[in-house]
Image 1 (cartoon, rainbow, N blue to C red):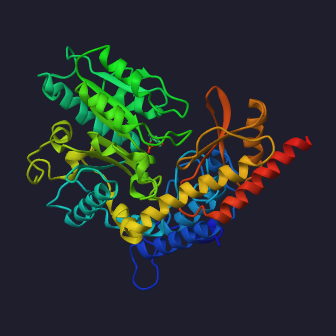
Image 2 (cartoon, rainbow, N blue to C red):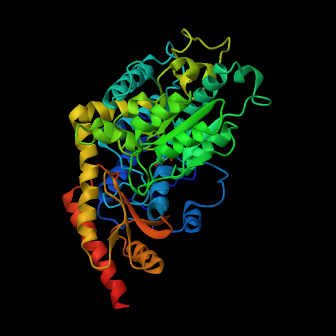
Length: 481
Ligand SMILES: *Cc1c(COP(=O)(O)O)cnc(C)c1O
């Protein structure tokens, strides 16, 4: 598909490559080549080996390490890029990519994302970019409804769940300090009452990162139960052992077990102690969109804020996170800025007042597009399909000799182990070497595990069978050694 990059090189170095039909600025030719390469990639992604075949250093050589003195036409650059990058691309969009919770790309979201780049709308102000803001406002309202969260909650579009957590916790920090009479936006943190930031031991590592960005310091850790859920009795004890402003972080979807915290018990305990409750639901928040799985999130809507990713379960291209806050006032106090040159609407009405950035791409547009394309029933089917695939993997792989399934497979996550850590790690390496399936090792409950995260909208029953076959082959190869 890809032509040799040198075939189209020209020496005139002009940026304008005259295409056909009067395209004297180069857009048509460059976009046509991009579409050709994108389709070649998408057509091949299901069958190509999942891991990359080139190293970063090799791709550096292929791309060309020196900045050229003179330029070349955009279309030629795109041809060169596609050819040079090809072996260094990992098939994250493969339906047999189970490494980390990542997700593929739904066609409506991908195509809408191309338009977002073409339109180039800097989505900060309601009066200036009405189309992008309208799509985002609808996407936000639809999401709040789909996820069963309180109507009227504010939604900010961030790069990912890390920044969504940061965004929500910035609002939390403002609010819990306001309640004790400390204006953090005015007075800063020096001399402020210490905020107790309370988390379950099996929180995601980015939670600590968001807390660090906000100057909250190290979290207070509450022990987990066997599936990694925060222990509510221990949370109550921790809350009772101290006083002053507090933020409690709960989890919808443990990255090893997929487990959901007991929101009813934990949120009641936290609110009894006057704490703000944030839910990290980077992938698990989506369980609420499925009538079959919604029970996992019972009580979750009573929290104060929620963060999730659209680039994981919803299969929107990177990057796309969502920060949702029940009471927008704290969010605006923490994140809003004003400048005489900005044509602001009223306080809280502009997208930039809900996220850390002023300038950003129109991330809500692909979210709107995929929601419109799937509809309410389609989102539920998507989520149910991921969970069904995880159960199918657990059944199929769990039956193979020597394999132990370590978690209750309630959602999209599966952890398995073999007799000892070395054997478990070797299994993941053999899968990588064969390339048909990618699943990575982790440590859970003091053991090496191979973790399967099901996040791709195309992982169906036949992909599950093919995955089980690949694991069976890798196990047999291990036995044969
Ligand atoms: C992926 C993930 C995050 C971080 O999300 P990013 O989109 O990578 O910033 C946080 N929490 C959980 C549970 C996750 O799975």
